[in-house]
Length: 274
Image (cartoon, rainbow, N blue to C red):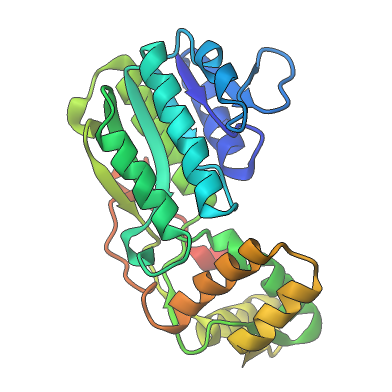
């Protein structure tokens, strides 16, 4: 049996849907379960052993934005509960190696270290930035004629969330069926096949919508101020600014990726997603 944690979230729900279509036995894990889903609350570690009962392959979707100590504690509870429940293999959605300088990187790398010391098999999916991360700015650009993003002159090899979900589902299915042990112990780098900057995005949106759209870089300082004014908690402001700071610094444009080898077809282009 395969379980997906965070199954009500954007990535987890896609993974769960693809697994449900695979014919394997799948159960969704979420903090507020309905139907056949199980309650999986990383902040209630005592509940996890029961939740993971009978699970052979656990797709552990990372616990999202929070302070590092909270995220690491959540993930440590998952690792310990999976070991106690006899889970055979854990597939963890981590952060691309290109993101080593991001403020969210330490929690992911600490989790990878916990998994490496665990008694079960592990596959790490180091996901790149989602193409959907830029969708709101793209919609506003079509409406206003100006694409405002804190990318500076940097580029990002963003991946479609749909593709990342497909890759995770394939690894989980093959691990569950035990038809392909090649995923055991593997760390996959999953980024987009094309690096795009603000000018590239503005040009593509202009062509798609038949109107002139200009790129207006937003400074990181102004971006931070806008996030703060919107009422985001301080850790989320810091993490979000850090993501775009890494794009500005030129760290996120690499396109070397294991993603094509885990998909049935070619990866979706980020610009098509937008």
